[in-house]
Image 1: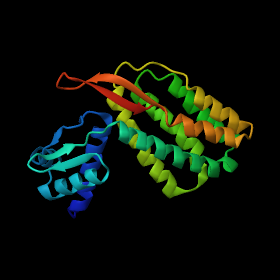
Image 2: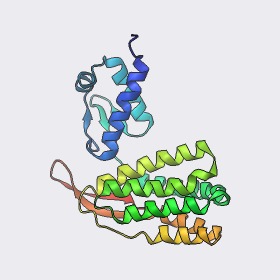
Image 3: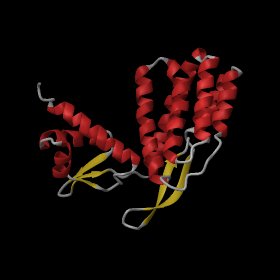
Image 4: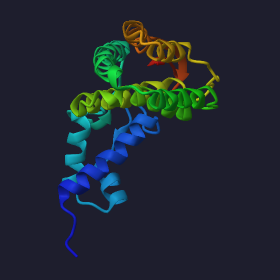
Length: 222
């Protein structure tokens, strides 16, 4: 059987590392050691270096002279940028999706919202929240737009996990309920306005880093 191509291995490595960075198991500033990663995946240094380049292109890693490659940090400005981009793109998607939203689709979105309300940890809440948004936006039928929104949700997840890995509280998302009610009654402008505001809500909390220091973390909670 033919050996897998280096670029295929690089993509696989980058996806695994991206998942770890987004989940917070690799913290901002953590060094990505080429030798260790090559050994873990049974790969040469060539696909590992390509995986690092893919992570840099996603904004998840940064290469520093004499310091190697590290997990990229993020600040409030980046969180705000993602929030504003999500608002612009999700509003566009919802306007195009609205004419195609059936009662069955809205029932699916409502079920996702109920799952989020029952979530006892941030991971299950984020998954349910993402399903809610994807359900009401997918009928727009614009795959490039949806792919861009998916990328922004991945960035949002990273911010969220960095801030709320612990101390998550069960919550009812009133905005989701308002969006569903507006869509069911045909009030598209109201639904769009609520969604645009909803995805720009940024929470803040102090978190303790692996070194024991405390820093302020920001996240999009919508």
